[in-house]
Length: 514
Image (cartoon, rainbow, N blue to C red; front, top):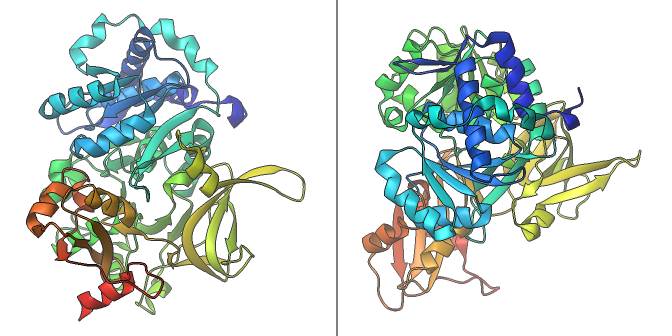
């Protein structure tokens, strides 16, 4: 069947028909079968219809990795409704900006600790809000009434909207279609040899791009998914013990988590004997640190470095490490070759093809654009015509790469975007939040690197009316997530300028190193 006439709801139904009794979600105290998860999603799809949701609408989910949240994602997919997963712990001001862009019809939530915050958000954007509870499922109309709706969904429908940091101060919502995801699933299942015997450790929060690999390549290949709660992430030995107890076979996380666990001596092959693949991406992994992980696991598991912007459906390249990669332990591992789904161009500053320059990705995994944001979509997404007059989508990543023997090596960014603790951050978003504080007249944020993947955010602010660094950082925490709050804030009467009259970022970085 053509992917253009295919959809994720039908895809999941086929898996349920083959292995309905098998565990889809594994929790420490219970398992949810594919059939049970499917039934819940059918009933929730009926609820969405009852509440007036139609194909092309959006819902928001205050996701906390409980079973109904996953079922609700599936319910939305069945009806061609896009979902947005929210960080319930994010500052209300930032969540409000996300919802104002996404314009959801309903905001769902099921975390008792954040009920009031979710109600306030829903009221602020004028959408319905609904607290999810398993007890409500039997009262919803029979799921069979909704089965025909799946067939009305095709590959052009938006599956999910993933929000990332925006340079204007407003987060960008990447709209990813059913077609994008189906191509990604087909590649991921083949590339990692995923079978129904695998169990994915769902370490990443669902509002974070890495979770797309867990949810889609995991569940939609017939494997199990083990949700890992936020509370475990700061307890290294408990986290590793939990992954071992749940017999997880595939791990995907940011390098900083792996480095932390290795440093704490919690992560060893003996501690996780079932792991067969360790995937890492979202930020650079210095080879000097990666070698420690490789020495522990290379005889047991494949270690795979992956790369991919949110705008291209999670992962665009995957490179399996080999001993020769550590003959030189300086810098970062290669990104390898792009997935067969992708074509690419490397453009220099004059937009001419080059060996080094900006990586531009082309292919069916390139997203539809930024939701409700025509201007930023036009700036980054382009339609190109090849020699056969075939129209293709191209995304300008902003990543600077160098091609050597067909492999791509990351060399930097053409803008002020950074990766910090795995999160993609536009420094301008933090700066915009700082100047919204009444005491701040001007702000610049720099990223002070210690090694290839280590660094800290430092903010410089000019305050003519006076300001205290601790007070300003506390106020900033009400506007941006914790991972965007600088570890240091320096108050100045005036920020230094370069010859062009602009704030001199490089001079500020040099001051930190002195």
